[in-house]
Image 1 (cartoon, rainbow, N blue to C red):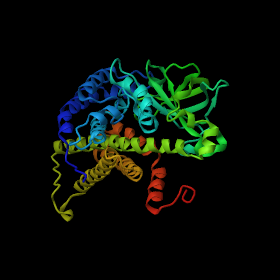
Image 2: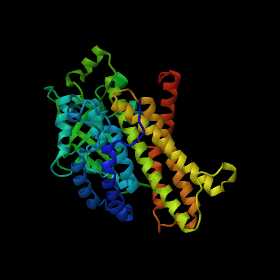
Image 3: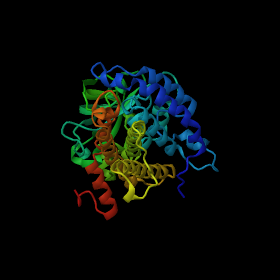
Image 4: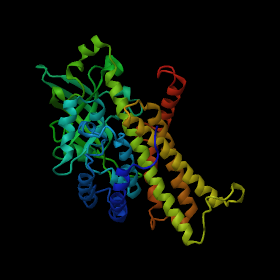
Length: 424
């Protein structure tokens, strides 16, 4: 049975995370929000969290690895993904854009964990355990293929000798793409098709290591929010990578092998990645929402306004109703997120729950942060406080890793039992 109380390992790390969030991230939030043009990295945070991750035993915020599974006490319930949600919530409470600069595999690491072989997980994820900070990223979206991931055109073809894959195409809106593509030991997981005639079955994830010839960062976006995190466009022009850098069994990735197997494993790998990362997006959204809610509560207290959470509804003021609803929306999203993470820890499918928590959290944080600005009026709209920034940071959680509309469709398909071809 799922237990919503905080396990002891989570309680032990909370003080460290709160210290990083409040003492390191908050004081530099405005600085790196304003520094988007220069794309200067928040090294104050990066160095601090890298040391903290070593202390906490996290390797790149990608969830449990094979070593964790092997070494875990069989008498202790698995909680690695639940711990990860708490970490992400606290760091996003500090600053969501800076949190996205956390060293580690990030979405690229999640793709390796979801679709890679044991050997590939060891080869690509072990690098995040020690040494200097390094980053991973995932490249899925293209100029003509956003939410419709099956429409990607980036091609991967075998070299004449069959020893390399050659990638050609363009990817956009790659979170952390600059850090992953140019830093030593980083990598970008690129989703490409080995044959467009194969449809979704032809989709495969390829690991392109940093500074590989033919991979070029062509643009860095200027954004509404999460400005401390770089969002890149990356071009692939005859970019050659080793044959075994396709995630999963490379022998099953060739067009002939796919035709013979009639498999959609490539697309399933993409969906499995999203099942792992959507709860993380939800946790980040909740961290932003909690920051805004806490700040407004403190601001109101200074104005002499007390929120009576236990008062009957008919006796509550309009402000009290707003604050209570804000807290309730975030709590509901958090419980959905914990359930999705708990299912991952149990090794159970969580497609429905991952989309549900992502929808709820994206919707909740957008409303909560807008309401926070509204309650504070001109002070909320002013850059004197971080509330307006949290409102800007919040919206992305309703967009990336599948828009709210796409995830609602996934929820509906799973509940009603429809295939994607039957419910669009």
